Length: 232
Image (tube, rainbow, N blue to C red; front, top):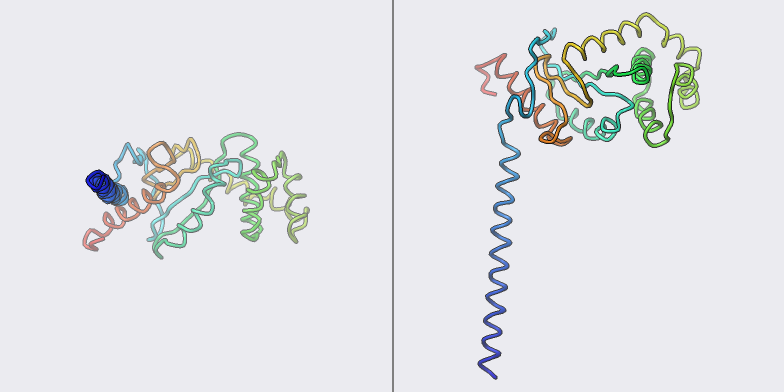
């Protein structure tokens, strides 16, 4: 009986030891995989595309342009991460937001974005529009409907909103957003275009979290190309 107990104790000890070793090995390889993903070199054609006809970006800052739509649930879900990422950008990186004009309903929402810009409206109204559509299930089919929504949720009067909605400035910005998205061949959102040269969009290899990792990689690459002696 004593020998049997001793044998059972030995077996339990071996099982426990194997378990500890297995966890340690698993933890080691998990660390290796995560570390490899973090420091992986992103590849053209797999993680990003180089535009055939790059756009010249004016000024010294590196431009990161996000194409989005208020009507896109993925853009809505990305907003919090996007704001966090923006706060990490270097001072020589300029972030620009542009709406995608993909359909008549999205054109109305794009015009709304540029109307809020023209009004120099509070950023909260941007988030409120997103929330109204995706959490409140609201649909906005006209400038009048959006003017009423903004008037109900801010100090902006409907007449003032519609004045900007119908302004040449908003029409010009809307046309520019449409032209820029076509020039960059943006077919879906959210999409980032780095310095007018590289296009990054969410796909099966580039999820929402890695979207910004790829963008950071391309910003760093652009810095190196523009200043090869910087050591970046």
